[in-house]
Length: 425
Image (cartoon, rainbow, N blue to C red; front, side, top):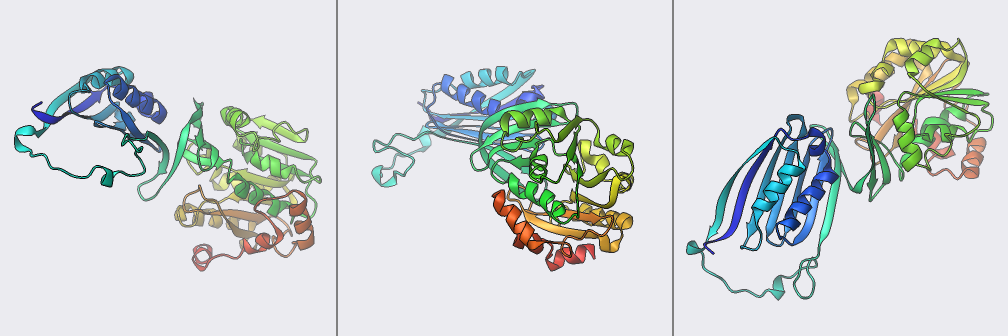
């Protein structure tokens, strides 16, 4: 053997973009390529980046197979590095070319560690053994597959065991990941929407604060909210006679029913009128003063939700609210999306009045920065603190065993940090 290892530097062109953006499929392909080449796998670690791109490595006893993909160009860059002569990296090369449906590939092989230049050194193998090895010194195989939502400044990564649902709807990519820390997680176009382990924060705070401060709510409208969590929390209130929910994407509803059953548990409730349609069109067509509460449970102002962040839309919401009506929306993160956060409150105050719009906060671990805001806009005399019945709130939270909302938190949520107060003053 003239060298310690063989290093093949590979480029694949004209690959399937869908395959290059599927982290689970890529991990399986890389593991298969290593095993078929005769390698012993120690660990696999892969990340999917939002909205596209996968990086990963399969660590083998004989070295590694590493990859980064650019789905938007149909391109993948791969390193195949094997030590000794028991593994044939060209087997891996051919299998990956087929797996990625590459139009063509190129590769160059380098010899690494020329034996003529090396001198063997003696050392105590047992002293170097760690917890990743057995007593006999054999490696323990591990696996790490990660979903990563990122922009150019921050990122959130969650380890997962694969996708349970992955469909391109008419509007967006709808996916459910089985994460290890937060249970099943819904993403839309690579952005985290909700998870089983922390969804209650968002859904309890967007619903119970307006419901427990409106004088007599009978009809509620939810725009968006296809996962069902907002409807579930609203329907805990017996005073409501009807909840209308308008979700534009039936695939969000389908995915949630299949894989988020505790969140979607009220989607068949007899008081729920579930409509698959454009929420903007529904609001425009609704009668004057036809709802006591309107909750805009939307995604960020991109894609199908972009039209929900306009002055014209919120004027229409104002029109369909009853005289004591309340509108509540998710209003972004003050720290992460400062520009949109400030614009939202300027827009609402221009419609409802300076003293009629209030900001409150909640803390959601899987949302950017953790700090998330909601808006409370009152058409009439409803007020989130002045009209607050503490005893009623306490009894309600106890009866329904709420996990986040309670009477103390209701009041505290409106106590804003100075930097947030200054942003919207």
